[in-house]
Image (cartoon, rainbow, N blue to C red; front, side, top):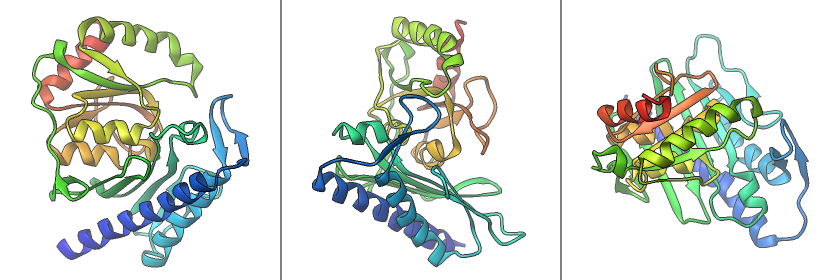
Length: 268
């Protein structure tokens, strides 16, 4: 089992690196980008997303042809062999809008889940020079160094990360109420525009907690294991575990802090 997990993590790392190399090459080339809009006016897909997805999926499929793949962009679905419970979650360019504007907060996120949840993951942020990896019961790492969540205990001293529900405008009024309460009862709120990086920042202690109203599984597929293997906790904002269905995500550096953050966001 140990060798299997190590091979899975090596594959996740290599797939994320393959996608990140596409990011770097495209960024260095400059010039115009092929861009289209998906679900909302600010929800973009570009030629870089597609090329990065192809690169990551090629790595995974070559090593694990019997595994299923669920990637964000069109053509990113691949069925696995019946009876095989492994599912790869690929966000080839988390933070497309940032990338298109030259903002450095973007990354490739790759994770493999089984029936118990996330098993091995990698997040590669080339403009930040960071690679985050984690494997179940083997810890989380940033550029090879072991990660631990922050030790902040008081919610009023928490620095939180968040994401705006820009793809689901119906969620904005409730989210703005949460944001209002968080701003009044914590040390501050930051938004990077890339959930994979936000969750990595909880894992390395830059952020004490994080929440977002709605994310797809490829958005958080890697980040949840980074947080939990670094000693943190992840759940739905409304309660319950985070699974493979799109929904809310909340993370904190301890179970007690997670409960306190939920009270803040819920107005309790």
